[in-house]
Amino acid sequence: MELTPMVSVADLDAALMQSTTMPVLLFKHSDTCGISEMAFDEMRAHLQGRPFSVCYGLITVQTGRHVSDEVVRRLGVRHESPQVILVRDGKVLWHASHHHVTAEEIESALREHVPPA
Image 1: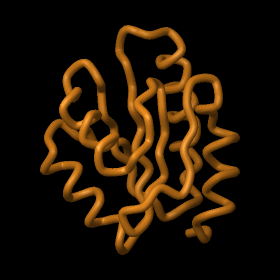
Image 2 (image 1 turned 90 degrees about the horizontal axis):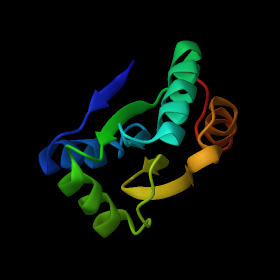
Image 3 (image 1 turned 180 degrees about the horizontal axis):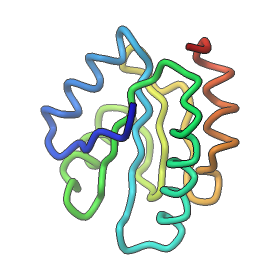
Image 4 (image 1 turned 30 degrees about the horizontal axis):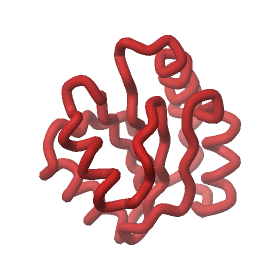
């Protein structure tokens, strides 16, 4: 699995629908922010191990602001960037932002909320 770009609200619709059968981890990224680039590196490190059955979505805020805004509206999580949001059954299980977006914290949250693959 890898990060699937989410460029439209239809992509978000599909991800939220998919969350009824498999957890979805949304990653909001700013391509102009150094902290976000470090978080992206942490996300890549997490993806190398991939011990969990999770779908991953990437929302780049510069090109997908409308998708990011819709995430706020539907999930009720205030926008931050970088940010990760774990969703199951269309509901937020966990979220983190900025320096808390690390491979270790993501994996800890997944161990708590998602059975291993």
